[in-house]
Length: 309
Length: 309
Image 1: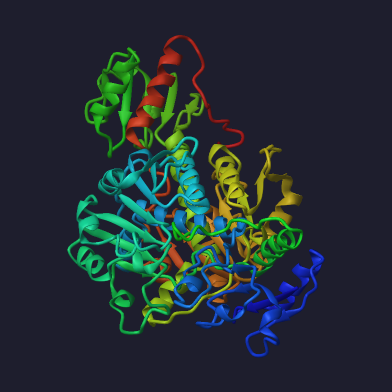
Image 2: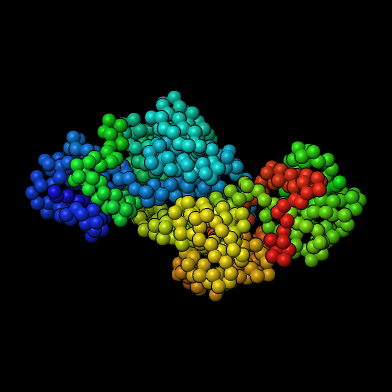
C-alpha cells in the first residue's frame, strides 16, 4: 500500500501525521523519487505533472487536493478509469461562503463609493435597496453553493439558486434546466458563479448573459475563469452594464501581468484565494477516505466524469 | 391628540400613511408652524431644536427616530420627565449586522492587501487564521449587539460579547462587569463597539484599551464617536498597534474636512451609514407604539435614563 503525493505547497509532516492518525503507513512517494511505480495504489495530488498518473498501473483512487478536479482532468493522458475523490472540507465551504458574503455586502452597500468619497473628504450617504429587494442568483448548488444560498438568505437577501439538476434547499428558491437559466440571469442583481468547469459551462458567461442581467448588476466569480468570456465581461464593465466584478479565478493563473483585469477600476482581483485548501483539515479528510478505501469501502465524493464534477 | 414631527430628511407622506394604517388622525405639526404647543401629546423626532420639547407642556411620549437617543438628551433643556421610546427596527438590526459582518470579513481576510497587490499587479496569496481562531469582541449587547454576536458565531468566529449587565446569548460566550472588560479587550483581534453613549462610555476606548489589544488588531466603531479618544486611536494606528479601523461615527458629524481620519491610510470612513433609518419600517414601528399609547398601554422600549439607553 503506497501513496504518491504531489502538492508543491504542502507541509509533508501534516500529511504524515494525518495518515498516522488513521493508522495508515506513512510511506509517501514524491515526484523526485517515486520508486517502483507499480507499488502506487493511491495518489493524493494537486496539479500533477502531465502524463504521470497514467504510469501508475495499480492506481486505485486519485484524491484531489481541492474541490475542483480540472487540475487533474485537463491532462489528456490522465487515467480516466481511476475514480477521483474530490476534497470536501467544512472549512473550505466556510471560507468560500465568507468570501462570497464579503463581496455581496461590498456590492450591495456600495462600499467602493464610500472609499471614493473618503478620498474626496465628502460626507455623503447613498441609498441602497432593502436586503429583501436585492436579488442574488447563485449558479451551482454543490456543497458550497448550498451553503452560500442559506447564509445569504439568512441575511435577508432574495436568493435564487440554480443548478443543472433539481436541488432543494430549505427556505431558498431553486431552479433547474436551461429555460430557468434565463430567468436566473435576468433577475441577477448580483450573480455568483460556483459552477464546475465542464464543456457546457466553458464560456457560459458571455455577452448574451451579461446583457440580460439588470443594468448596473454585479458579478462574483469564485469557480473557474474559463466560465467567463473575458472580452465580453470587459465590454459589459466598460459600458456600465455590469457595475463591478470580484474575480478570484482566471483563464490563466497566475493572471498575466498584461491582463486588463489588473487595472480595470471596476474589477477586484484576488489570487484564487476565496477558499484556499486548509492543509490540516484537507489531510484529515483525505486520510479518512483512504482508510475507508483500505477497509474495502468506497470513498466519497467520487467525481462523476459524465457530469465533470 | 396631536403629533409633533421633526426630521429634516423625512417624507411626511410615509409617516401620514403609517399613522392612518393604525387609525391615528394624521394631524402632524412641524417646527415651522407648530400651532398651539399645549395640544401636542406626542413628539416624533430626530435632533429637535434645542429647548423646543420643553415647551410642550402636555407631552406624553417622545419617539426617537433612531436607536440612539443622544440627539434628544444632549439638549440640556429637554424634558427628562417625559419617557423616550427608542426606535427598534428589524431592518435596522439587519443593516447593522451586515455592516459589521462586511468589515469583520474585510479585516479577517485582509482584503485591503489584495487591493494593494492588485495595484502592483502582484499575484500573491497571504495566510489568515481559521475563523475559529479569530477572536472577535463585541461591546454592547442590545438587540444589534446580540444579533451581530449570533451571526458572527454562525460564521465560525470565536466571539465574546460584553455588556455592563449579564446577558445570555445561546452559543455565545458573554461577559459582564469592569473586570471582564479587561479580558474582552486583551482577547480582541477585532473589537466591535456597539455601546450606547453614557458618561461611563465617553472616552472609554483610549490608549489604555488600544495598548491592551493584541498587536495588529482591528477596530469597528458603529456606536458613537465620543466613545473613542481620537488622538489615542490615531497613535495606535500610526504605530501599527491597531492595524486598521472602520469608523462610521465621529465626535463631530459630518466629519470636518480637516479631520486626520479622512486621509489616514488605515482608516475607512463611512458617514454614519451603518444602519440608516428606513423610513417605511420606522414609521410603522412608531405608529404602532403611538397606537399602544393611545389605547392606554405602555409603548416600548422606553429608555432608562439612569443607564442612558
